[in-house]
Image 1 (cartoon, rainbow, N blue to C red):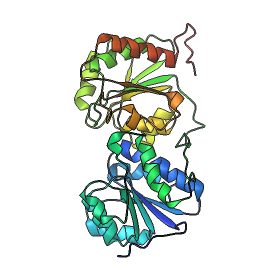
Image 2 (cartoon, rainbow, N blue to C red):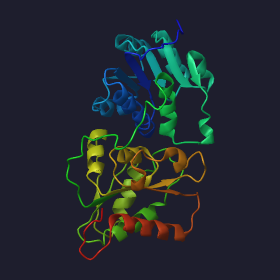
Image 3 (tube, rainbow, N blue to C red):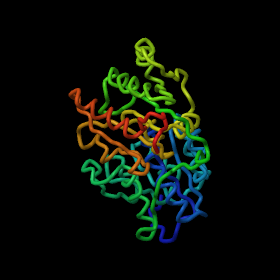
Image 4 (cartoon, rainbow, N blue to C red):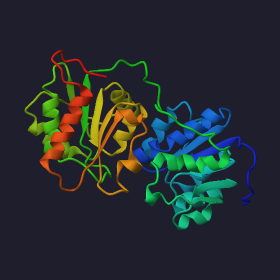
Length: 326
């Protein structure tokens, strides 16, 4: 396989991010920036099954390739797309072998892990230093192909739902089935929701991930105020629309929070107390003015919940007319 450099703008690029929902969302600013700079580029993205349908709905993605369980089917799908360049935001040995076997000539990736041996352009980033948000590290990989400052991103990422009417609704997503390192106790989510339910004309909603069934049952048995429980899983497309119509999304740092960020819905989000798990790296990609990001340790005092409640009321509004302030 040749590792010859491409000195012109490539005709086709394959971006890869084949893991969880939130990580995938944070690779999309790179995709949108590439298409904004060079609309004629054929842009593909390689994703895991959980993100396939959602990725297929995006108007700045030309082709979606599923990283399936069958190695050669995935290789053939990559070959059929004929990417001149791949940009991998996250790497492992299987991905590296797939791209090498498929004959992608220029393969860009972070200089990390043993898997970097499969790539032709290794970019030293040291993401563990958390010098910038995760999505900016991904943008940095793409910047190796284009003139300085050619790639830029400004929210919102997804504009499909811009004309949908807003609903006076606050969504609580406890998210204990995710991978987040910082979160509130369930009783504190209930306290916040109970307080929000006292605001006239405001709908309070609880949503859950596919692994949160036990939490759903606990919330249902604990409700002593008016709230809606969304008990059946939505597709990512439907969930994204639902969030886009809401006034506020309250959750730990998890995939649904990044979906909220992708449509520029205001977020009240909780992050781990370490730098690696903090909002400095994992903040959503919405307008910063729409983000309220808090670091939550394994043990936190009641005053932290007092602060969160005050911030929540500032965001959604709390006046006698029941209007939601925007």
